[in-house]
View 1 (cartoon, rainbow, N blue to C red):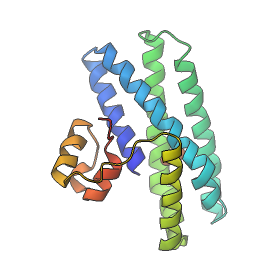
View 2 (cartoon, rainbow, N blue to C red):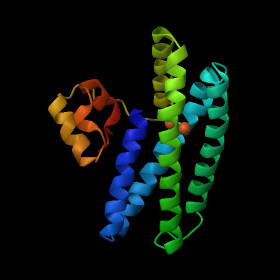
View 3 (cartoon, rainbow, N blue to C red):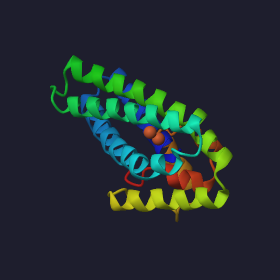
Length: 181
Ligand SMILES: [Fe+2]
Ligand SMILES: [Fe+2]
């Protein structure tokens, strides 16, 4: 969820940069999206999906669909590298990537995660969460900003346009905010 909301902030900022015709920022944000999505899809495919896939038929089907949606996103990201950065085609591809990920993340949050939480024990969920965090670290994700106050985290979340920030706990904010700004 934290990864999803961090990326949603990037999407929002990309749309704003596009409105302002700020090509340099659009490029930086697209690079950040690609890096975030690379790590997030990897931890889901290596750890989360295999751990939950056999919990129920419903979750199993959602995992199968999720894998295909990851595939589409990765294709788009690799195509982005092959077209000219400031071209109309590049902008269109980023926008389609954003739409595809918004749909995918929304489906995970409204269907898959609730389906998993219904049947998995709290202990197992915590263990799974820790495994995801460990793998993220191995893949080069920065350490969460656990030492900041809630106000400091909120200020960063505001800068990063993270949706739902005002309702987040300090811990949720720490996990969601990008430490690299
Ligand atoms: Fe996913
Ligand atoms: Fe996800």
